[in-house]
Amino acid sequence: MQTQTIDPAKTALNHHPTAEVAGHHEEHPDHRIFGLIVFLVAEGMIFLGMFGAYLAFRSVLPSWPPEGTPRLELLLPGVNTVLLISSSFVMHNADVAVKKKDVKGMQKWLAITAAMGAIFLVGQLYEYSHLEFTLTTNLFASAFYVLTGFHGLHVFIGVTAIVAVLWRSRTAGHYSSEKHFGVEAAEIYWHFVDIVWIILFGLLYLL
Image (cartoon, rainbow, N blue to C red; front, side, top):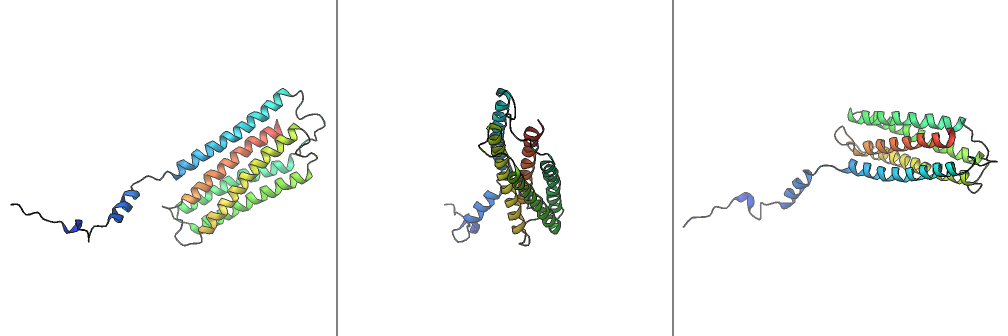
């Protein structure tokens, strides 16, 4: 009769299934960025639907904006556009900094980006307060407030996300050259907000 040898490593006392499970999970690829991109594609489809509706309104009405609609000023929105585009480059510097293990530099660029986003929102609110039409004045006015307001909401969410990343970076080692999902996700979202505004600015203020 053969004697069965028992491997001590596999006994109940020495076997650690939790360690195997942890190791199994570590092998899974990180799909968080992919998930964020899918979410932004869905958000982009909403904006595309709004852009399409705006262009449809423009094409069917005899004059656009409707007669009697005060003209939009270009100075403040133009400054806001330059500010938002510039903030994308500043945000990219934060991502570059963390990948170079420069956490202090990352924090500096994140703070500047958040401040630029906040200034953009203040500028938009200032523009709202000085417009000579309201949400119900006509179809152009309604489209203007809905499009810019929905985008402004996304800017606010982006600023909040950046501030959250900045806050979490206070913990030593939370972000590093190997672990920086929060920074990268905030950057991708911010670029999305930037691109949407460029299209909006062209549709509302230049066409």
